Length: 113
Image (cartoon, rainbow, N blue to C red):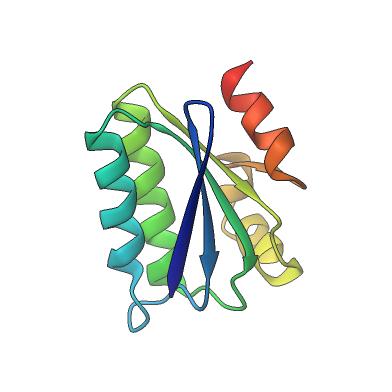
């Protein structure tokens, strides 16, 4: 799994590529988000367009990151979800927890507006 980061004002957009699974570095995502939060960046957009697969460990990591950001008065939004991930969020009822958007721009606007 790889993460590319870019800034849009105070919001950090993380473009995640690869599988998000226990074996493929779920902790990489947590460490990256914790590092951003430690530096005062607690509004995060996760662009998941290049995530072909996420297992329950990866989904659990999304929940942990979301919860940690909320504790720090931050927020997280998800963008560009593949149909399989949309189904996974719906089945687990996490679709009601996460704010999801088609584009990064929509997500940034929701986090700053």
